[in-house]
Length: 352
Image 1 (tube, rainbow, N blue to C red):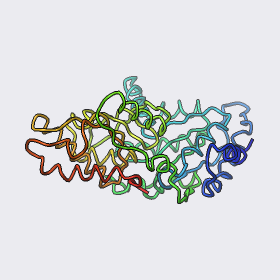
Image 2 (cartoon, one colour):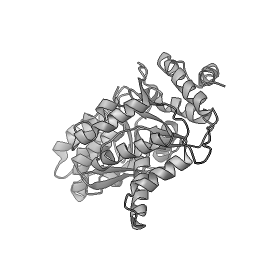
Image 3 (cartoon, rainbow, N blue to C red):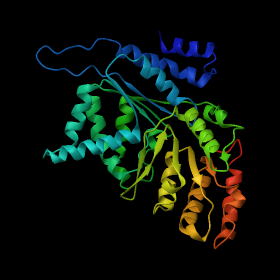
Image 4 (cartoon, one colour):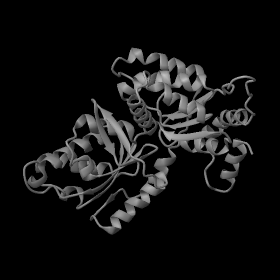
């Protein structure tokens, strides 16, 4: 069955709503699935890399169905394959390179690339985004090895390739990677006026109080609906430090108050989170006072970062926003945060 037929079957069953922008993407997916289904030619005297199948770079706004379309393609491809969030993949690459260095190899990236090309023919990435200088220096060589080894790459992103690692340190050294992407992948924008994720959140409760079993169950239900119950962490690299977000999937992050505000984090860390996530699920916001003043200051900074970036916030708290911080130094300043928490509960809040 073609991807086009699979999509139409999902529409007929009511599983998804028809979207012209998504339907326009289906011929690209059909092409890749059909070409990867062809048998791999074998070399007569040596291993021969498969004939390369041109990949696909799907970019566009949040909630437009990019990941859903890639899911359909991934399920249809019958070849050695792997699907992974781009941030998680790069974390794996760094770990493998560390292991390789311990073995004394001169080029730690070479065995990592060889492992991928030996074991995969199709590699699917969620949300390609480069925010770290170390990643920026690695991806060019790594992807060249993947393409040379006959691995087909399909990725989603919220940005056009030209905007990857925008304003990053030494960005001129990253530009050849952008050219590499364009030369090996069809770059196609998914232009849809419909944000399907916001449709699921529109009108839904986003602020749960008080903290307790009922709030935890409600938060978990929202998380499961948005992510399928994903549990993989996300590690952000910020100014040479690692900031771990306990759970992350497809632009949706989940953490507890003390994960983000009980640690020595600052504005740069929260801005990095706001760049990586379109929805943040934050649990167990306590009452704030002079006894946890530092945590309260970080919370104010976190909300400012999420607010300015138009990130959708879903949270559980000990009290309504206006009653979270009612005594001690900082109560006056917190009035703006309480107001922003109220504004962020609106059904249409969030990035378009």
